[in-house]
Image (tube, rainbow, N blue to C red; front, side, top):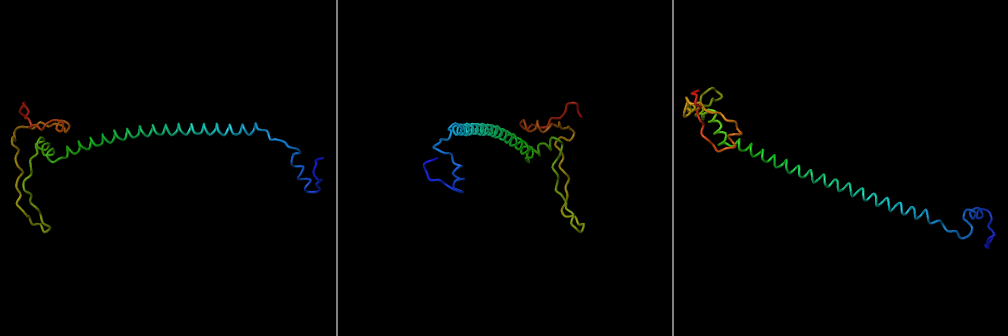
Length: 153
């Protein structure tokens, strides 16, 4: 058969598993496998790159939204601070006809009165009614004096 020595038993059975003669494996399946792996890798990279780009655009939009909302929050906080400033509160209280309180008196735990109370100050023009304006108007313009109504009420 072949030019080598005759094999017996187990060696003969193993020798039958190997093809006889110098045979070459077909290249087509290997080349096809390599092309499919390279193509799949390139498509995978393309999908990954697209997903990362989309995420980057979304993150940029969210950062712009965050910046605009932060600016709006700071503007609203400035409005709150301007309305709660002591001079603004005093001005609005006077426009509503309120007057500063007098000296207070304090009650001790045993019922004794400490201090001498004094009455609240009287407004400058007691008979003249005060025009009440909403806070938006008060904070927007320069402080103005309260104007009495013309109908005498």
